[in-house]
Length: 475
Image (tube, rainbow, N blue to C red; front, top):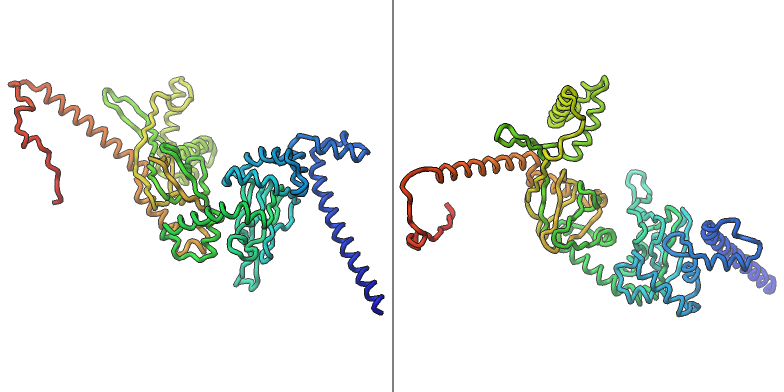
């Protein structure tokens, strides 16, 4: 009986080993099929050794790495030659996903990192499991989700927390906190990854990541907005947020300026100036200069569409939908076009010499300020006055219910829109300044041209006590 039991156990063990080897072979075939898809079928023959040599020698890229570089990364670390490691060093210095690590660390990673390929729909990390490695995305997209209790359906559901794209890292939180996996990561498309095992992570990557992590935690503590956040929220924010530096006079990308409008900006140091561009039309009325504020770029696009729709039967409905400001601009545009057609002129837009752009310094964002929450940014730019450091947090995540207690971010957005003057208010101030300059010039000319006894008093003849300027004190 004992011998029969041992035979059954041995038979079962062989089946498990065979099943494991078969799965490993299938994964290897899928990975190699991904490689072979980059090679013409005519080049593949019946000679297996020739086919392998052809694949290894091929220099063409599929993703960020060549097939030869992937072949080197698929070898065991101890089997890589010094020449192969030096070749990988050149590649690792240029990889975006490793850009925030020192050059020396990247060169050491060339001796131990591994290449992995996952087809779409594969689970790479599962929530609750023990961590074994960290991953860098070379190509493809990884969806990150977390199990949360749904009080309505009375069960745990997967909640999407974000997406990892090429140049990003995932899987390091479990090592830094010494806890199981906090999220589930699934390949949304065919993905190429760099894998670093736990021992190599602790030896090479953890010191740099620990320092960056502490700096991000310190940056969060400088804002009172995050005092009520839980440890999980702060940890998630440290994963998603990043810190960017901007040089003096460099434009900071926000909503409406064609940049990273998906981020909210928290100023850590330095000052940012708010520049409003006023696009005005200048026209001479005799000897007097007349100005008219032109619509912003977004309004101009609406006007072009409205002008085309005015030719249809539903133009009355269109006019009722447009705002009064756009309605007035549309009427002027239509009348101007009719005048040009009656005079036989061209149908071009306003002549370039009649359009002026005036930039007005509206205010400043100093240390502790926040902007980019979705406030109005028509023809407005944020420019660094000096060296500025900002913490960028994804706006979609910031406006989620747990991070938006009491609608705090909407209230800050409303405050910014009320505190910063609008284009119309700035244009009125612009006209007032022009009128004041014209009036001052007129008064000065009248005094200069006024006839009478000349005053030969010199500045040195006036007592010094009379020349001292007295500042106005508080009333």
